[in-house]
Image 1 (cartoon, rainbow, N blue to C red):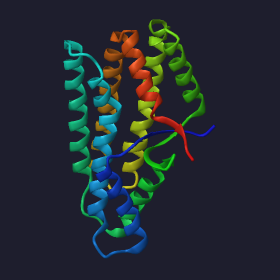
Image 2 (image 1 turned 180 degrees about the horizontal axis):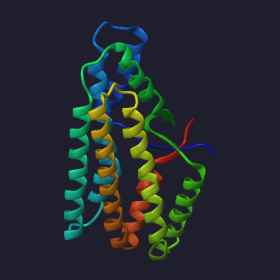
Image 3 (image 1 turned 180 degrees about the vertical axis):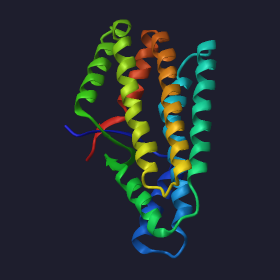
Length: 221
């Protein structure tokens, strides 16, 4: 089994991704860093929207939801600001590496473009087992395993979309160090969010949680 995480981009982001790939092939003459930057920021925002903010919006109005919304928006604004600092004017030759990375981060499922990355088979098997346990009404007993699995899951996504993508950028020593520090901080913030959210969910909320993430894991066509 070759499994992927992937979210469905908005129509605007999908168009931008397709345009970026077309420009690589056709060499339109317009500086490629402009579309790379737009696509990179779009993916960053929509990834966090999918992983955290949409999920928080599923929760009923409460202090728990308000706290999670603040934390999710903090993570989103922090990552967006970091990406803007790292992205800069660059030659088409250097930008090509980033564009190729973005092309490798898109897949098609049932004719629909998705943005994501491959996941280890063993982690997917563990997550799907937890999803099935929650669906069977065993949410409370499954919470510790879910928390561990989702930390690993998010660590892989952060590595792919931050560390691996940053490797395609022509970063100097100071920017590279700043990116590493930011990645570590964001990883810790996401872990805090997971530790706050999962233990506090009731059975119905856990079912919504696992159904949401289950829809984001698939095998590519």
